[in-house]
Image 1: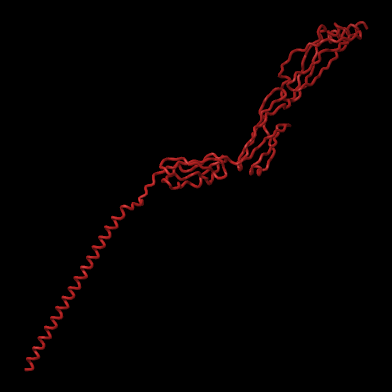
Image 2: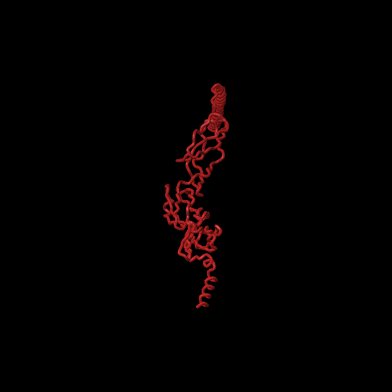
Length: 317
């Protein structure tokens, strides 16, 4: 029996020397805690120690230091912290369960503006802040939407999802804005004559389309020669249009000069009188020639008749 008792005492000495030296029977404390990712764990501060004589006493626990990265992981994890109870040479340990980090904030998305007929391009990611202090760009999963929503002017919202969080995108659909207006650089006219300005302009839009749009011009008549800028605007729009007009002096060759017309008319009258007199002289000469010719012809016929008569008288004798 004596040998058995000695063996038992030696076993207890080697298995738990601290307990043997200090007569400690039990150490009680919370040996497992849970903390959120990014939040330092709350480890137990004291332990209740029970001795062989049945007495109990609380002692402070001195925990060893550990790396902050152990509880700042974004995914769920687990690690163990070790420590000791002062003056008793009793070692301690605690299991720390770290919960997965949660999204604490998602940066708002800037409003999106598109023109009618333009394809909608939604952001692929958003900036996210996590409960462990991390920041990252996370992929957005967008809900489906009707393409007809892009065919008229209005404002609508789309929902997207980042893990279990919902994010909203506001979309404004507007008419396409004018990017350029093409008209001739210059037109020409004369004083007092309305400038022939182009009736239409070629208008290009932000959605990469173009079309002809009517122009409403301001005053287009100028009474003095020079270079002018004429302004107008596009039909059903406030967009202004301008064109340069070069006005030359109107050289009118049909100006009346009454004082110079009378001599011209008199000159023409004299020419007509001369032509009439010349015609009259020609007619008079013709009459005289006709009379002379008639007289000669009559004399010739009388002479022939006289000769024939003489011949007959001779024959009758």
